[in-house]
Image 1 (cartoon, rainbow, N blue to C red):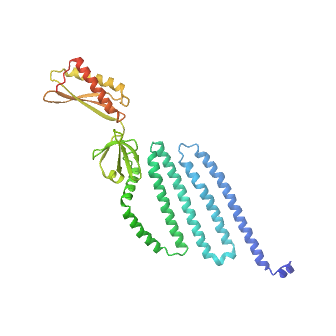
Image 2: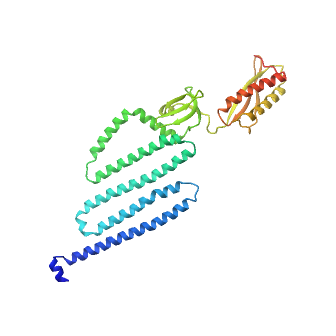
Image 3: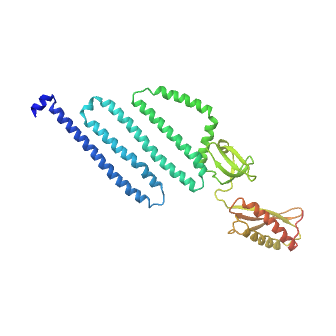
Length: 350
């Protein structure tokens, strides 16, 4: 054996060292493969338990973390292998920078994977609550903006680790950002206002709102720049989100959709008020049974209001579950009440 080493010029100590390092590296990767296999079994069992829960959030989190965990184990094995190999010691500084870059990319990838999983669950939550248009126009855009910002920061950190001077880059990006912000001030203002409307939720798609400027209607769409309101005439009013966030408006569907409806009337001074009250309430109950959207669990109430010049004025209060039902309810009740008063001989003065 000694003659073989002498004839080939191979140093036996270096050869043994190389073989030992190769064995250690092999053992490290074998252990890494075993750990990854164990983790797969673990995540499979966790996923099976998550399937039995009422929410899908835990499923999404498990799906989001499994691949980054496997990649992290492999990356750790690769780093330990580089530390074992003595032939790489002269390049230790460059290798450390390389693994810092890989570690940064891994951390960003893992964080965004979890973030996108949570965002996906929130999108499904909005769709379950009939908020599809918010999801498609705003949530997705917010997720893309956040991902772009995180990747931008990661790239800057990587360039800094690689020895590049990023101060000038950051300064130029700051100046460019200011220029873009000034040029797109209205767009950014509307986008941020739309983001506020999504988080604070003072209105939702389908709500009926009344603006202080006089417009009113059903919220048709909440986009990243504008909100669209459909009026009774089926026209669409487009309002910039920045303007909507500053205006005063009444949401007729919050905190609950049930709302009172008042119908006013007046009868002559010679009328029997007990008879008036009985007839008005009976007709109110009958009309409520026929109108879809009326809240039949609430009994109509009559209250006399004032003595006017020629009438004793009163109002009847109903409750509706649907804002749109109030108009048909008032319409039908006025016809029924007029007919009943005429039959009962109750006079309504002009």
